[in-house]
Amino acid sequence: MIRRRKHSRFTPFTALSKHRQRDAFVQLRWKILGDAPTYGGLFTSDLVLDEPGRPDIYRQWFDFMFLGLDGRSVWNASIITGNLQFWDRVQNLAAERTNARLSKTELEEEFRWQFSPAFHVGRQKYFRVTRPEPSRHAALEGLTVREYEERTASEILRDTPPEIHETFRLDRSYRYGIGLEIVVASPTIDRTVIEDAIRRFRELGETDWQNPNPIPRDHLPLQTEAEAMAATGPYMPPG
Image (cartoon, rainbow, N blue to C red):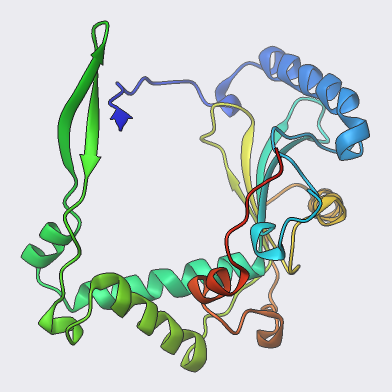
């Protein structure tokens, strides 16, 4: 069940005064210092990092924050592996090819979410969200959308795998800090990978960047994400 919210406008961090940016910078600096025993002193996060026993497939991304070199910038970063970027790109291509085979009406029916009132808490109304049972389509050779997408993803991965590049991409629309999306050529994310990415970003001048050379194909997955997840099995964090 979800709660429908009204969207409110906000001022992006980059539009704040230098004084307010500096205040946020100082607050984050103290948090990073306090969290140094956990994260090492270059960054901080609200997430658990380097959890013992966590399978590699569940260590493909991480969200964290670190300080800019100008004394007032706060970087609100998300780092992912080349593996995860590869899987996302393959799945997006598979979805595009699958959807292209269906009519507008079929797509509307397939992805129609239904909202029904569930209960009230005070004056707030909550809704229950449901989706119809998946249909089999003649245009998809009798398969469901999910089945056809997965088959297409396997074909793309095998025959026409997309190129993936290491990147730093800025997003200045964030409410807190400056958004930074990072793709690294690493099979997993750990503290060392994050620290190396921060140092490299600073060496490059804290700007957008893409490695001109793609990550070698033999460093990227040979299975789809669904296949890799099925091979690994479910994982429950301790506690």
